[in-house]
Image (tube, rainbow, N blue to C red; front, side, top):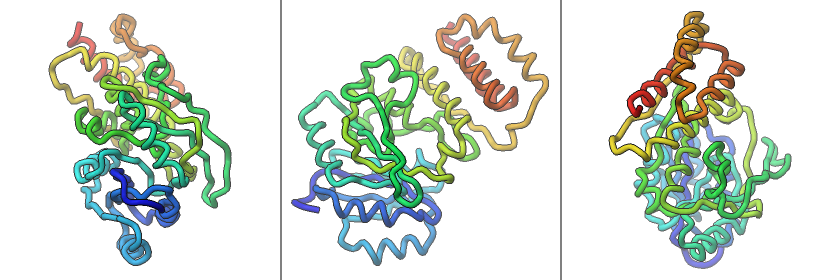
Length: 312
């Protein structure tokens, strides 16, 4: 790393044995600019990991911030509250920072004052650091695209954003928790941030994004897609109302059981769905294909129906 510390806080939530965290921290040593601080949010790290960090990375401005073990949203908000940098660089505990990333994103945000967050392309890596390919996210100001509000167009661990903007929107929130995992919290974050300014992507691959079997996206692909649809629906109408509503849905693993009566119940609600302004019909077909009719689907649809009915 070169030069004096710049006003960037690197936010890394971590838990368990964090087997790739050493590689993540080593990559930060090679950054062309030195961040003000590297905040590792301890969301249940094993003691041997904490000891290794304290012994092997004394040259880095690392701080260990204790979280409550309630998941990624709580950990990120804990780190956000503790951070001192003007800019927040997100990074997961299994990913890699390429040398020019922090500098490139910092310069972009300084030159584009209306832009609140900027991501980049990523290089997909396997468990042994072999390159598997490159992302093809849209580049430039992506918050002007219709697709921006339908799917997540930003690789979360590739992003740098303005801390003040994140605080202004209330930080991260958990719209859907499945088996104690927060889902689509990043998509929801970008939607809410885009109401105050621009969100962009750089064309260069500046982050190594590791793919492995323990990732939430690998283990929970179906529920994550459902949570994305839910975040889209919430994002379309929540800013039009004045009352604060808790949109969080919590679903446990035990609720993913077949429930024969659910199909008839949903059919009786289709009249309401047809008059909604959201893509619930598409969500219904998708969920039926992916998971079948079950209590998870019931809770998802009934909560949306109630919200829509309250607004009619």
